[in-house]
Image (cartoon, rainbow, N blue to C red; front, side, top):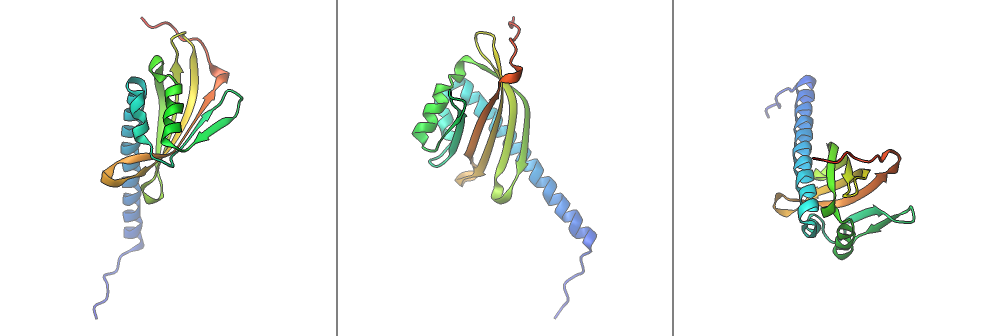
Length: 159
């Protein structure tokens, strides 16, 4: 019986590092493509945003009482998204961070602001957990949005 070829610890470490770098690049590419598509649809075709979710996806949004509401049906997810009235706001994404996880899951963190027609600005943090689906697509497993009202200043009128 032939002995397997000897592979040094350094070669194993280099291979693991290369795989980790590939996973980071994949998470970055998929995450950023997801964010661009999601926010474009949210602004221009909010009725299509429900296509990013599936039955059982979790969507968490702040409520008027200072707490949060979590919904898991497509009907309720669509209702919450449409209630945001995103078509009347300009969303500025200031930072997008993407991290790969087990089983192809990707964590996406978005920091930005919504500019409303009345020139008010609301800062937000939105975290998505997306997972692979059939056909190479990804869907939202979890979507949590929170607002930061401490730093809301009027925006300058755009010319």
